[in-house]
Length: 285
Picture 1 (cartoon, rainbow, N blue to C red):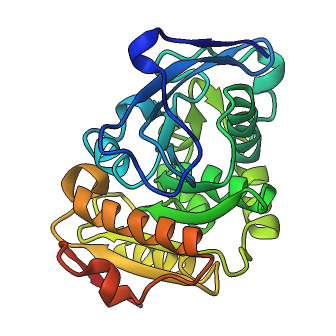
Picture 2 (tube, one colour):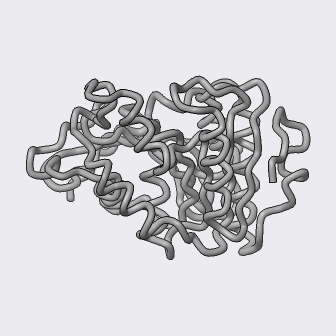
């Protein structure tokens, strides 16, 4: 599959090594994943590579603001625009038919392979991207060494959203212009992404709830996500709303740093109080 890299200043990143460069280097390009191409960007050096997965109907290359530069001081970090978002191509109709979040996880994997962004990975997923991040982790467990879920969606929210919106199209799940088969996605999440073994897992919940559902449901589902791994914890980003990476980037960096450190050491996460020391966050587990 063809990959087009941008010139000179964008090259030089390495997937190897255990420490990030003090002067992060940029790599960017477009990767053909089977007749349509996705844009991606990488910054910094080090292993494992941090993969940033954006939220609902959002382009990864514009969703993580300054936090991705901070993460590049931890290890190499890459993000991308899902099909139909940002500057990536839309899906052809055949690829869009019966689309699930698992299909999007497979598209990500094809992109990483085409762009020579080799494992291991630590996946960092926001909001709807949590569906993709979980299914990617469950589908490629030998390649993922850690997972950070930021205000992640949860399958138990799907039914309540439908009831809230009724027949209003606002209740449909459409990503990059393509309808998501959310019923099939929920089934996949429940059957394949409920047991992630002992992978280091940090769930970040905002302090404030801004959505249309019950705050009690939101608190319950976020706590549940932390039980998907025997090495899972939940933290609350103080003063933050849904876009924690914008409101409280320090909490995100601390969670990712701890997850990367555990991955490098082949060890469990540090204790939660150690992870949040010095940042605006508190432990919920």
